[in-house]
Image (cartoon, rainbow, N blue to C red):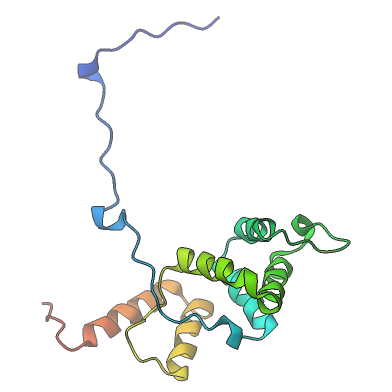
Length: 157
């Protein structure tokens, strides 16, 4: 049998490490009231959007919450892109599920990036390139560089 450890006094124990997250990060940002024009997307694009929004487990949870089934297949056996497409098809076909799915998107994403700024199609293309092409750290540096170009940004020396 193992040896029993002696209890140490409270004075010799180390205090818990302070939280590494700043207090500002503890509360999520407010949910935006910006339009969410999901009906403008094709079924395939809407499925891709849902797949980007939700982790695989949440895609399945949403299907179960909406009581969606796929004849001949278990949802859990489908790849995430097909589960997302099931949600997209249901969103487009049944008006009663739209508020639930829109609420789930808003709850998770909170707000669109650069919501208060005018963004052109070319700008969106460049933002997408940040996600899929090149070195992520270099892209962060490019974003920081762009922030430094903003009017009213204090000079740093």
